[in-house]
Length: 283
Ligand code: HPA
Image (cartoon, protein in one colour):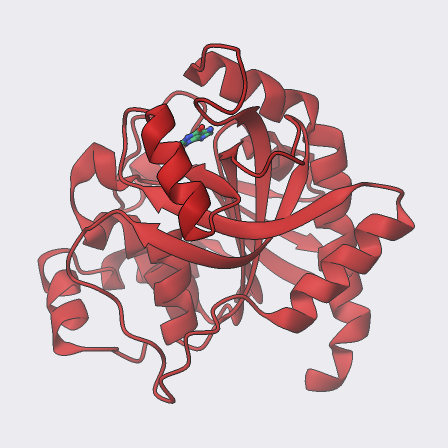
């Protein structure tokens, strides 16, 4: 894996991912092309995939464990439309561990195994007043409000255009073809674990955020710095504090994520299948 800065390289000295990579290589029938990270309440998609191999992360040497309800902490390998997928059911959050090496670990592993594309998903609170719970949002850009060092630099060209335009357009066209209404917007991340206050949501709105969550930004910055192409999809599970009237809790988030599961799964399957046709020339 290309190391992006000495600081990032040092992160992985304390948590080497080589053992996990070797173990996964011994279990996987083929190197993955696409890595998919499934956020809160969205993990079931992995189990719907054909001919999947499920690898509990507890059995993977050096692999960090997530503690959040709704995150199964499994890795699923599957083949879909000729593409090999490595799927991470759930993720580690900064608020759980305060340790960036754990948060970035699956990305490092996926990149080292050979995945060139990352599809990242999450549950998020809607700040844009046009958004309703149950909407899907294609992430066009992000704002990192986690205030967690070390920062992650751009790739070698200094590029900080993190989300791949072509993949995003592709997802948008596929969603329209299915009659799904898909929003687009800027995802802002706070560290959590508490939900934002209404004043914080208003601040994020003024800064240009359309949705808020507690994940994704570090993984995407890192994947992009490693040269991966990134598609990001948020499931808007609730109106952020102060935007709607209902009280916010984690059950509501997983319940709404559960309801949009079918649209979400259809869109993911279309995107992955379509990537084969659209990007076949890249092979
Ligand atoms: N805020 C932060 N994270 C979230 C939210 C929210 O409103 N909904 C789902 N994840």
